[in-house]
Length: 398
Image (tube, rainbow, N blue to C red; front, top):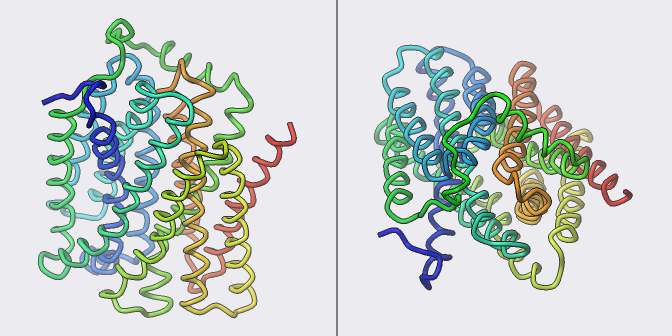
């Protein structure tokens, strides 16, 4: 039963379904973080090669966003979302029967392409149906629900690893894709007006959509600010297995609790943001979130450079670094979408492309130059936040 906007349950149901849709990527990454050492042993490679399965996911996701954004404007949001989910699920299935690590790496790019193709539609659907602060509020609620995925994903991954080995994790992702496909198909209407669905797109149309977005300097600088702040999160995701399981020697069974504890503050901050939006503008809250992240990033760098780090101090500062994104991402996305409502699909896609491309480059460099200490990781996270704050300071000054 597809609901219409006048139904009293339309907004809560739409929010939950879109949050689950956006959770495709957190599940694609967080469920198998704990299994990375086992995958390295299975394929006979070092763990930094397995870390490439995460950074390559960022690349594939960015490509999916690039094509998916404008195509949602031409073909409709729902069609593109369902197509992307299908690619994501089938790729996860074929990873379970991959004969070599090279096949896994290639399929991870394809899986990420499907994920980017699908999830680029979520924020745009919200922008189709709502305006102003309501957009920021719903995106924040979606982000809060989405962040439950990193709480449960490592627990699910640990259970599947213990009972079905690492391949069971990708079988779960295949079934998860089927579940999301069914929800979206049955419950969510097409939100793109029929008269705007041309079902035609060429190279000129594809590029012109992005030209409109890049013609506004404020949007571009804001996009890079948000992207660098998010890149710090993806640095943490790609290295968390090394930090806690290898460097600090935490038992694999404890990893879900450590990871969930770090993510929990993000959920709390996202919830707080829904209340703050009643009194403050998205940009005011965004500024505070960026400053919190920078403070945590500086603390991570200082304690590591001075060799004063412990698993407890790293844990606490990572909580605030990741938690600050509960005040950053939803408000930043809403600000960008509200500036560019006529090309909201491309605007949202550009944000996804940029943050994942930046994360791919940074994560790949960390994988290639992997060391046995934490300093390169913490320096990178601090620099990501420093750049994000510098760009936003420039915007405020203008």
